[in-house]
Amino acid sequence: MFSKVLIANRGEIALRIIAACRELGIATVAVHSVADRDCLHVRQADEAVCIGGPYPQNSYLNITAVIAAAEITGADAIHPGYGFLAENAHFAEIVHECGLTFIGPPPSAIRLMGNKSEARKKVSAAGVPVLPGSLEPLQNRGEALELAAEIGYPVILKASAGGGGRGMRLAHDERELKRAFDTARNEAEKAFGDPAIYLEKYLEQPRHIEFQILADTHGRVIHLGERECSIQRRHQKLLEESPSPALTPEMRAEMGRAAVAAARSAGYLSAGTVEFLLAPDGTYSFMEMNTRIQVEHPVTEMVTGVDLVKEQLLIAAGQRMTVPKGRIVPNGHAIEFRINAEDPETFAPSPGRVSFLALPGGPGVRVDTHLYAGYSIPPYYDSLVAKLIVHGRDREEAIARGRRALTSLEIEGIRTSLALHLRILDDRDFREGRLHTGFMERYQV
Image 1 (cartoon, rainbow, N blue to C red):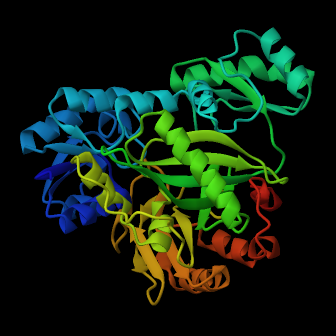
Image 2 (image 1 turned 120 degrees about the vertical axis):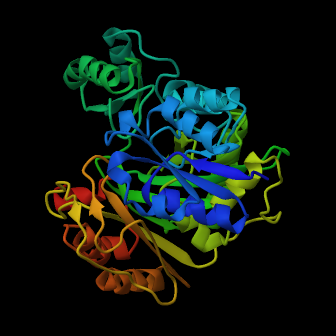
């Protein structure tokens, strides 16, 4: 096992990794920007190193500074968390070249699954369903128009190297596709440095279902069930739950097998997530694979009892995963609410000083956060400030606990998304499990 792990991240995920390392007896090193001197992960780690200015490119995305911090502190492994450098294959390669262990998948798997068109081609060859569309990047507008006429509108253009909704353009007819083609290529080039785009059939009102994967160096690849991630705004998730109210045990088993096949096809190791779109008629298609720990990983932890970050550490050290063999059956129901520092109506960011903080407790309630009273949220990073996770015997109890915990969580001094989550819980369609990726359009957000 590692003696010291450097955490190349900040905030609540850095605290989560520190907790797992402590339980395994591993010392930790926090890196931080100038703006994060007072962040809680800096206080709780065994050592801390300032690696640059407040903007991410000067600190958390500065590969040279991160590697230097690992070397001067004697760390033997680096955990990237999520975001920043977590899905940067070049960074993972440099970590290995410097004699350190990257706590995540091999660079080859990151690079393969980071290229969406290559990923589609790879998993399709492994028998995983993919939406009709191009398995290679589009060469020109004419090729896109020909393919769209073949598979039928609507279609969507996506950046091969992209994610998070950037470089995506929807087209309902030939005129819209002609206009969208150059726009999508330009967005892809600007956001990812790669103009390659591909086209696929666009599903109307699908569900977003993802399966949690674990794979170790001893040849074992498993899934830990699914998470429903359909409640999202502009392709950014707001609320996740497990199990999905839409899946039968038979569907779960079939989609789980497909997720494992996708991970095996990539030569995957560590924790990862295979994401699918589930159509209203019950058919499903591969969307992408996230080659890192997910923001919503606590949902799976709550219904399985598996500590995913500890499993990542064990797998990276060459040990076998500790999950018992046999079918994993979810225990009860869990929901995660992403609490963002933003106006619940306009979604404008709301950085500032937290003047008062009261966290909920009681049965089935977990809060992952780096907030404390007196902490000043800097304006340079993602607006996520807390994750509220609730667990109940069934979905009805989890919703009731979510409402109780949301009304008990008090954060003063900034605006947050708490009120929005309460609106969602009171929505009849949500309570009855009628979800799809366009759910939030009713709130005009």
